[in-house]
Image 1 (tube, helix red, strand yellow):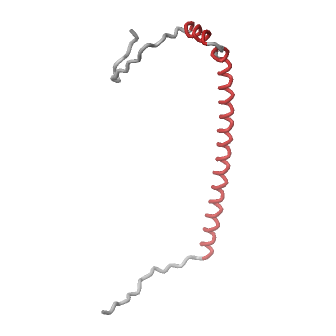
Image 2 (tube, helix red, strand yellow):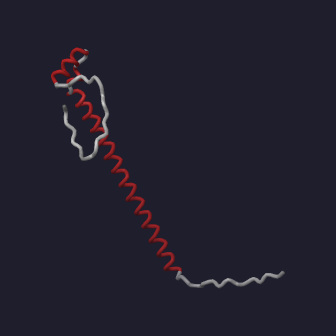
Length: 107
Protein backbone atom coordinates (compact mmCIF):
# COMPACT_ATOMS: atom_id res chain seq x y z
CA UNK A 1 0.00 0.00 0.00
CA UNK A 2 1.44 3.30 -1.02
CA UNK A 3 0.62 6.58 0.57
CA UNK A 4 0.71 9.75 -1.39
CA UNK A 5 2.37 12.69 0.19
CA UNK A 6 0.63 15.91 -0.59
CA UNK A 7 2.33 19.21 -0.30
CA UNK A 8 0.63 21.48 2.13
CA UNK A 9 -0.31 24.77 0.65
CA UNK A 10 1.21 27.38 2.88
CA UNK A 11 0.17 30.93 2.86
CA UNK A 12 3.17 33.03 2.10
CA UNK A 13 3.19 36.62 3.08
CA UNK A 14 6.00 38.99 3.51
CA UNK A 15 6.42 41.21 6.51
CA UNK A 16 8.67 44.14 6.23
CA UNK A 17 11.46 43.69 8.79
CA UNK A 18 11.33 47.38 9.78
CA UNK A 19 7.64 47.10 10.60
CA UNK A 20 8.23 43.86 12.50
CA UNK A 21 11.00 45.33 14.64
CA UNK A 22 9.09 48.57 15.21
CA UNK A 23 6.04 46.65 16.44
CA UNK A 24 8.22 44.41 18.60
CA UNK A 25 9.97 47.35 20.24
CA UNK A 26 6.67 49.20 20.75
CA UNK A 27 5.09 46.12 22.33
CA UNK A 28 8.11 45.56 24.59
CA UNK A 29 8.12 49.18 25.79
CA UNK A 30 4.36 49.09 26.34
CA UNK A 31 4.57 45.93 28.44
CA UNK A 32 7.44 47.34 30.51
CA UNK A 33 5.39 50.51 31.07
CA UNK A 34 2.40 48.47 32.24
CA UNK A 35 4.67 46.46 34.55
CA UNK A 36 6.08 49.64 36.14
CA UNK A 37 2.59 51.14 36.52
CA UNK A 38 1.18 48.01 38.18
CA UNK A 39 4.18 47.68 40.49
CA UNK A 40 3.77 51.29 41.60
CA UNK A 41 0.04 50.78 42.12
CA UNK A 42 0.69 47.64 44.17
CA UNK A 43 3.19 49.50 46.36
CA UNK A 44 0.72 52.33 46.99
CA UNK A 45 -2.08 49.93 47.90
CA UNK A 46 0.10 47.86 50.21
CA UNK A 47 1.22 51.07 51.96
CA UNK A 48 -2.43 52.08 52.34
CA UNK A 49 -3.32 48.68 53.83
CA UNK A 50 -0.40 48.86 56.23
CA UNK A 51 -1.33 52.38 57.34
CA UNK A 52 -4.99 51.36 57.77
CA UNK A 53 -4.02 48.34 59.89
CA UNK A 54 -1.94 50.57 62.17
CA UNK A 55 -4.84 53.03 62.54
CA UNK A 56 -7.26 50.20 63.34
CA UNK A 57 -4.88 48.80 65.94
CA UNK A 58 -4.63 52.23 67.59
CA UNK A 59 -8.40 52.67 67.53
CA UNK A 60 -8.99 49.28 69.09
CA UNK A 61 -6.49 50.09 71.85
CA UNK A 62 -8.30 53.39 72.52
CA UNK A 63 -11.69 51.64 72.53
CA UNK A 64 -10.45 49.05 75.00
CA UNK A 65 -9.18 51.75 77.32
CA UNK A 66 -12.42 53.76 77.09
CA UNK A 67 -14.77 50.90 77.96
CA UNK A 68 -15.80 50.47 81.60
CA UNK A 69 -15.01 46.75 81.39
CA UNK A 70 -11.33 47.56 80.98
CA UNK A 71 -11.19 49.17 84.42
CA UNK A 72 -13.35 46.69 86.31
CA UNK A 73 -11.42 43.84 87.78
CA UNK A 74 -13.93 42.05 89.98
CA UNK A 75 -17.06 40.07 89.22
CA UNK A 76 -19.14 42.16 91.59
CA UNK A 77 -18.24 45.29 89.65
CA UNK A 78 -19.24 43.57 86.41
CA UNK A 79 -22.56 42.52 87.92
CA UNK A 80 -23.23 46.08 89.07
CA UNK A 81 -22.29 47.41 85.64
CA UNK A 82 -24.64 44.95 83.94
CA UNK A 83 -27.50 46.06 86.20
CA UNK A 84 -26.75 49.72 85.49
CA UNK A 85 -26.84 49.03 81.74
CA UNK A 86 -30.25 47.28 82.10
CA UNK A 87 -28.97 43.86 81.08
CA UNK A 88 -31.12 40.88 81.96
CA UNK A 89 -30.02 37.43 83.02
CA UNK A 90 -31.00 34.76 80.51
CA UNK A 91 -32.29 31.43 81.85
CA UNK A 92 -33.25 29.58 78.68
CA UNK A 93 -32.82 30.22 75.00
CA UNK A 94 -35.61 29.23 72.61
CA UNK A 95 -35.01 29.31 68.89
CA UNK A 96 -37.91 29.88 66.53
CA UNK A 97 -38.08 29.94 62.78
CA UNK A 98 -39.12 33.40 61.64
CA UNK A 99 -40.62 34.28 58.29
CA UNK A 100 -39.03 37.27 56.61
CA UNK A 101 -42.21 39.35 56.81
CA UNK A 102 -42.73 38.60 60.53
CA UNK A 103 -41.92 41.27 63.06
CA UNK A 104 -40.76 39.98 66.45
CA UNK A 105 -41.61 41.81 69.64
CA UNK A 106 -40.36 41.45 73.21
CA UNK A 107 -42.94 40.04 75.63
